[in-house]
Length: 484
Image (cartoon, rainbow, N blue to C red; front, side, top):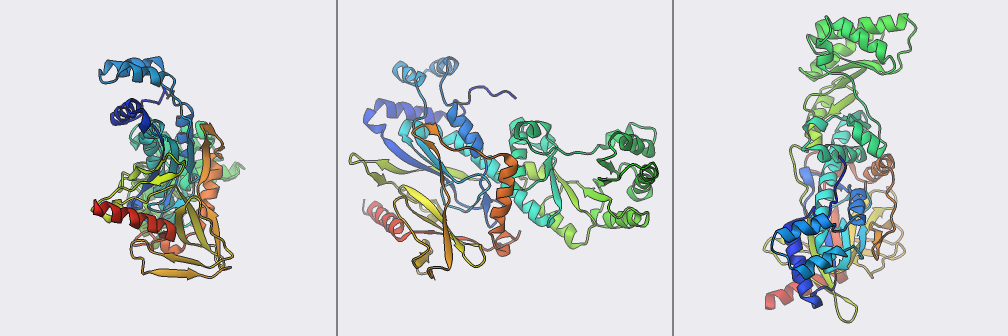
């Protein structure tokens, strides 16, 4: 999957608007765009930010080559002077973003772009495409891992993904969200993550009998011997044949370091408990029982509640496609325009839907933690120049219902700025961590959430508040809009 130049990975209207800005020279001022989302996917209490590394790669390689220019010329809608301008095009702006693996909440900027308007406009589609997809899969994965209560989750979805990119980058996001490994070998190569897998029913069916298939596989892979036990009859054939092979391995002095069975059909709760007893009675209490078969967080949670004797889960379709919630819903909105005096003029999008009214201005995000527990108390969106201190009392209020207020006493909370500089004046200043390091960071991030926020159904919401100064600007702009 060698990538061609990705600069045309955009919607046509981005380019037609760019030409409009180009023709109106005074309109090519510096602007601020925010990429954010309005609601957590899957009715979750949070989301996980992912995809920043691919955003960096896209922006670093942003250029129009001769083939791009020729194609755009063939459309017959772009003038020659604009096409000539595109030949020298590059990104010279700045980008700030929430790091990958960070817990995030609705309406706060995931990515902030400060750049000449033509540049800021062009990158919209690709940024949303990249961050929306990977954040969706990372969030879905974190829910599945939470339901498994510490059991290992393996990503097995490549064959069901919506294409090679979705399968590979989705597997990358799944690793960030908490998977212990992926079946996707290309993902393993590209991102240095563990690859895992067992064998298919076709392996068993290709041999004269089930025992021979199991024995041959055990001879090949004695230190990773997970046998699929449901090709014919799990309890009458599969498990007994697996036990026979395990006994022969032990009698031959082969260390049983990682071994067990995989179940891929039937009543997983009932069969796993029966299989567990058979394995234990045969002297193999440490044999793994792994399961697959259209699993998601709700089915895993139900199976755990039923006492299923499963400690390893392979999740494919429902994870890699986020089947129950296939779109993240991130948007990209203009927040400010640089005025002639060198100061940003705040802009706002008005809507009859309250949740679609944007937050104006050049903003940053503070995360507020309860000092005693280390748990997230709230997020505070404020203007970039505002400074808040842990040594002073902090008053938080709900921007949608401002009469709801919480006063935090100095010394009872800690603060952390979420967004980090990624590009400054066109130069990348951020080094993406390795995927497995992001995974560990994400695990620590999830530990800062209350259990009530992480529960699968009807979770508690984390408040995303506005500073008083930002709130006042927003109300002033809304009042001004209504006076027009």
